[in-house]
Amino acid sequence: MICPANMRHHSDGGLLLSSIGVAALIDSAFRAALAVLLIPLLHQEARNEERRLLEVYGSLYEEYSREVPSTIVSFIDVEIIW
Image (cartoon, one colour):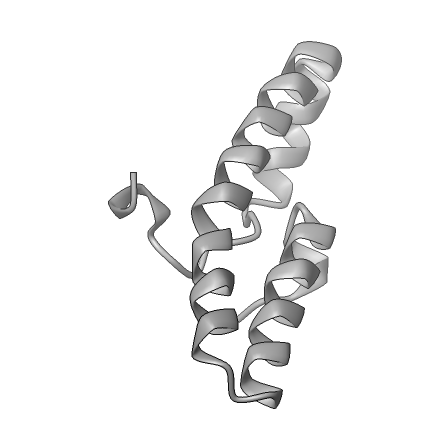
């Protein structure tokens, strides 16, 4: 389950969910495909951000990452895509 209290990258999650919602609302296969294509892009952006945060905050961010282990697409095994 996606829950903001245990998820990092909230805005990316919101973008993905709203993209899926709009595609469903207007019944657009094209927009649904675009929403699916967002997954690897958002995953890569999140990985880059995680690296930057580790560089800046070091052990503090490592601790936070352990406390809040879920990233935006934790419900999908994104490594399969890559």
